[in-house]
Image (cartoon, rainbow, N blue to C red; front, side):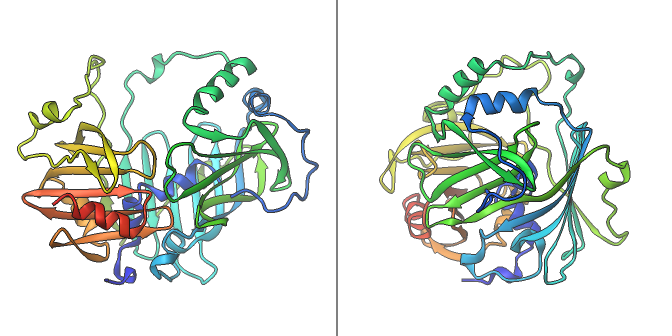
Length: 391
């Protein structure tokens, strides 16, 4: 199997579905309560209501620790902050602009992540490469309705709906993170979680600012597979210069396609589902067995990938099932080039590529004029067996 040391770290980050974005969303749960006095224990709905109604800060600056153990099982080592974890700084404005700067303890080059209303920019210092993606414009943003803050009862109703799909703690767990009184909650998939263990989230008890976020693998419930932790935090206006990323002039620039969205005025868009209906839209024969490696077929859906129609076939109803993307070979050029950087594997009688992590496995191969991408929160052996059954 080819070494991961030769793989572009940014391609892997993108291939894992935006690990950086996961980091931006929030930040593992502290092992011990220290610092500020924890708030009083209360039901989760009450704690969330308190967070929603608290005064929002004019800005945030914080010291953070990014943990990434997703690739440790593949033998990856190095000084790339996005691949091996790092410490750094975070800035966020009241308008929602956010920047994270990370650097490994080994002295590797900085990596920076910037998100605003129009774009996502990632500078990978180890590769001297800028990855940027324009975000879909919302032509009706100024006309979006405003809603009253939800009541405790309304929040509880939403939690009850979520509880149909996720195990979620009924009580907000009091604690202290970054010397701030905090609450935390623990979630996990209710149906077939696969390799995924708990997801844990902590927030400032007074204003709801996320302070910690971690996802754990079932194989190691004590060490986050990935997460971001705030170590120290300050509230107040942010200097606009702190929300800029200025890469070196000689940095390579890679533009990532903007996610597809329905055109304005197409609210009547109808999903195309079912094997017969999807097949009628595609130039190749969709491979969709009734079951895949013990998981029953759940749905066949038509999707759009970079302007090309493709099929997604799902098996099972939880993370431990399989998602299979099928498209005409050669149509997903940019994605295929990224996936081809993964280690090689023999599957279905051809050479494919595979990425394994503690949370799941991705396998891609091309056969019979179809490009297959199979993903699931399953072991390497199970993913390879499922991929082989698609031939």
